[in-house]
Image 1 (tube, protein in one colour):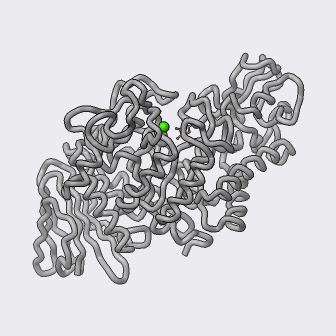
Image 2 (cartoon, protein in one colour):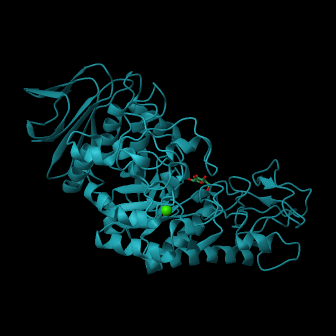
Image 3 (tube, rainbow, N blue to C red):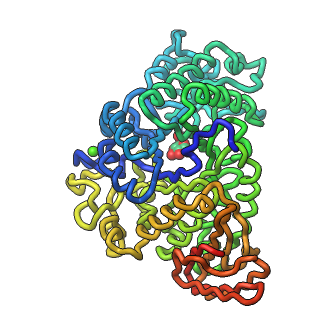
Length: 533
Ligand code: GLC
Ligand code: CA
């Protein structure tokens, strides 16, 4: 049993809301907080019981809100703090948890702290950010303390460290091993660094007090500079975790770290497998490696590449934390880019029946496409195509907003095969209906979720299909998936499975039992989920 892990997390099925593109309640062309509240019934009907909202705080939106200018205030374009409070309240009534996005590592250059910090005259905020000693000294060096600096930005005689884009100055969490020759590299226990840490804790408290159920933490590993093994960064997050365990035991921290083995030491309840970092290649090999993806119909992928890595991590952290498995997110291409619509269902069936915690990126449940070649919006560049408005129904702005077409945040996809919620809700065989069904299954049968055993029955190097068992003391589920266009035949020997107790979903899977073996044939691009005896 995981210590101090809120009970609800084990059954969590997350939905990621990109607020500007979800639903526009006041018809000004931009999605908003009341829009999320308005769609809670939809989320509930689908079975999602937790959401994560991308940053919704005041910002000049040079990086879509990951450049915050006021941590304590909802961006006016999304509504007010009261709107967010109401969202927390309404969601709670429907047993849906709401997590926010915590951008702990940096702010916008518009943040008042940074404005003060940029002034030549020393003040309370001078050390809230990291500045070199003079305008001609860069932070780039040959050693481990090398940091990117921006020069010529302010009157202050120095260059500041940026965390991501140039306009995202890094908050000062200090250096793990400051260079004694560079007095601007503060140690982690410096008073001013401590002040920054306290600021971040206050921000966390503020939203948790208002009713948030936790945070997805942006670039969680980025805080302390020159922190080769992350020891100092881990210490900070542990401190935060202690605060949460003591004062907010029902809330959680989810890291954008991409290395569960490490982030678990930092006290995160969930960390993701993502498109970058140590497990990036494994994650990408599922749906984002072109025709070499396992879920691509050409059948040239390799599921062991993902599974070996995932299962190893899973066992390493399972006593303490969960691994988040996202269908996608606002930083990568949607899965319906490299793989066809039909295979999106197979990939989602996989994610929703794995022992990780599923995170559904808005729109993936209907198979929204990645829209290529859009002009970059708010620092999104090639991420723009994954951030287009949600399709609620056919017609004007696909039901996202009643604003004029030219005023909406990003264009919707009017192509004839563009999916939408309303049409799919009416069709029991649509992607949406299947996703809903699998979510229900996962909720009704703990063995299909985080608690069940995972045993591969057929998962071989560069071979298809993938067959696995999810089980606990009471139940066994066999899941067989064939993303390839070719029909597959596999024989499972000595499985102790006697017969099918219940066919839950079957789009082209045939099981034959003889003596101790099961012969499973799968049509091209088909899958099945069976409860077994
Ligand atoms: C994270 C966010 C990304 C953002 C960056 C800088 O990776 O997911 O969208 O641009 O951090 O905050
Ligand atoms: Ca709006």
